[in-house]
Image 1 (cartoon, helix red, strand yellow):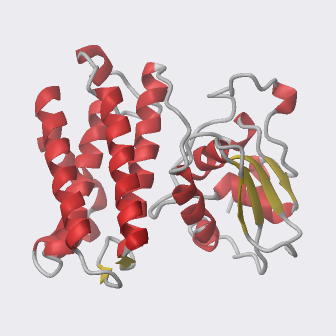
Image 2 (cartoon, rainbow, N blue to C red):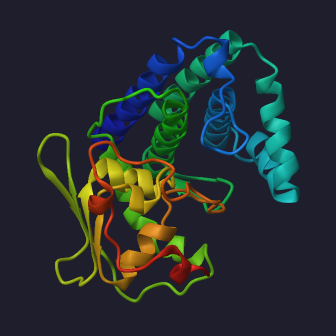
Length: 285
């Protein structure tokens, strides 16, 4: 339970970090388009607010309220997405911000009250409590990235990214299946530099394929907020080369992600950006 408590604290810290960014916004920033096609910062916060609420439903009323939400989503995903976001987008920015704040506080309390070792329904397979908490942290960080990209804000790199890197590594098989590609019969060794100066590693030494670089770059790529070539990641081997182009740390459709060259990494010349053995065309499903 101690590990879960720390994970919940990290989720709360990630939410507060994003709140610190958007709480200074005027109407211009709230309505500015983000790199996610057709979505403003208001859409991003509305999305987070709804799925925080849906997560709490899964924890507290899985057989009724959440089951109905899932039925609607399965029946018509596009209509469902519009239906759940529209009421939130009709709120003023101040009202939306307060709705998100109240909802996430309620969710954190639900996480802290939930018994360890339980599994909970979701829109795909059921999830462990730890996975649900990590998913909310990842979503908060990733949608927050869209917002900071839209307004040109900076935010510090933190050790919380280790949670996102881990679920991205665990999701390697899903990333290939989701694209209709064969799942590799071996893994990928990952070695990432941390802001503390240490190294985060995943995978076995015997794996021939590898990905290395900064943990922020890896998380940006695995949440599809950057194209691999706009980072300083380095891959070795064909499996790693494909993975950084199709990998995703979240469930659901992959989407288009970010186009190459959309975001040039500061301080990294073109010749020093992500080195990969394959190009995007070679990994289309």
